[in-house]
Image (cartoon, rainbow, N blue to C red):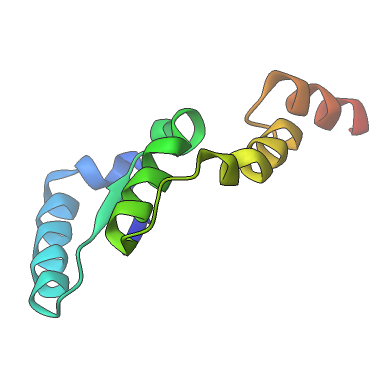
Length: 88
């Protein structure tokens, strides 16, 4: 199971809820993989590698080509933000 964890997950109460949830998922046989926004934006190959390992398939970084293409068009890049601002 892959999930995005935002900064609010570092709040002490939220962190405790998250740990309890992780234990429940593990009891059901699920292994949660949590990633930050930085990893999602800047190191997607780490997420893909973990997924490949969990599924027992060979790592194929070429599958990220579509991801990188989508990211280029997003507001997470300078070029994407410039295009967005130009439309405003």
